[in-house]
Picture 1 (cartoon, helix red, strand yellow):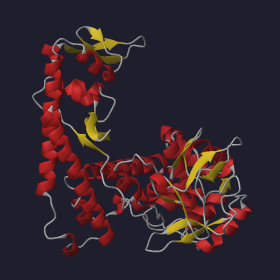
Picture 2 (cartoon, one colour; picture 1 turned 60 degrees about the vertical axis):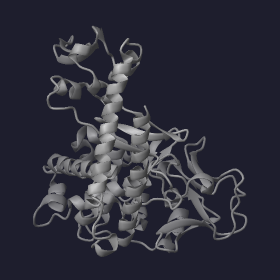
Picture 3 (cartoon, helix red, strand yellow; picture 1 turned 90 degrees about the horizontal axis):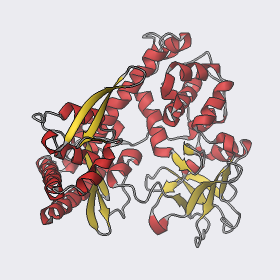
Picture 4 (tube, one colour; picture 1 turned 90 degrees about the vertical axis):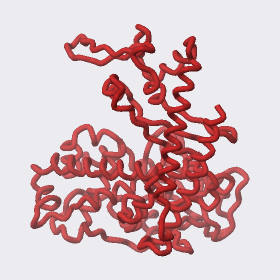
Length: 444
């Protein structure tokens, strides 16, 4: 669907009309193709208790979406049609954003949905969100061998499933059929769904006491980590979202006001959710590798069924060294002859449930298996199996990176320059971490 846009110069007027207090800061187009950002407008900025204060009802949260739906029958119809999906913050917010785009779509002559402050605010958001879900096939091909490659593939499949669910759930609603799905008059495409997903992923904040939310104006602040972070976001006693200057920080006119999107986030997650890597990032910090159970494992299907986490493990830095975590590794390293057992039991309501046992003791959670193995007389054997599994998977990933190294060089490929540089940095950071991990396991 086509989106209307508004110039950033009009954002202050929108903020004033909606009761947002942001005296002393302003959103501007930043230099060096950095998009929009927040800057200080005078020498007194930061002397007030807050830089920005956004009324509670303007933050886009799960509860507020359903409050908006009370006075918007079209929004309510869609939320109810998709069922449990709209009872999650992400699901409700994505549908809400899609409704704002629909309401303002040039091609829609009959207004759909009710106008609210977000109907105009969404017009200030960039039309292009440079996340990997929008990269070309040639650009995504450069991700082979990285942990991001599998994450992007899985995300694209997930978005397709969500879009199909939205279509199937709303196809019987008259206006949805006419303006979204009809071959002759419908304008909604899977790209529109990717757009609202990208808006949410790149702008959602974890608000204290609230959870995941999109907060207008505060979400215009760019990211800088560590000591370079200028401001912190929080929730005050009235539920308002506030942006305050960090202790010890001062601002001069035209200084940029930055927040942190998460200092501990790894390189893969930064590119996945925000589309960039900080210049100062010198380590991948963490990465997730999937893990497959061998086909000849007689308990393969049962192990996959009881596992609640993703089938794999996470490598991460800890105190200057490499460590790892992954319940799946321990489950994959033991079998029936060791004491692992699965039983199908019938619940009180007649349903059948698969239970996992270790030496006849039921495991309430697979995550407890490691602690039981640690006190087992043959713990050294289990640990050796785990280390061998981890080292083998790390070696496999290193070989994949090596074999997929771009040839010809990035400059000779038909890829966006910034995207290509980001991918090559990611490849280098992950290769460095994988080599350290391999050496760490070798030393064990």
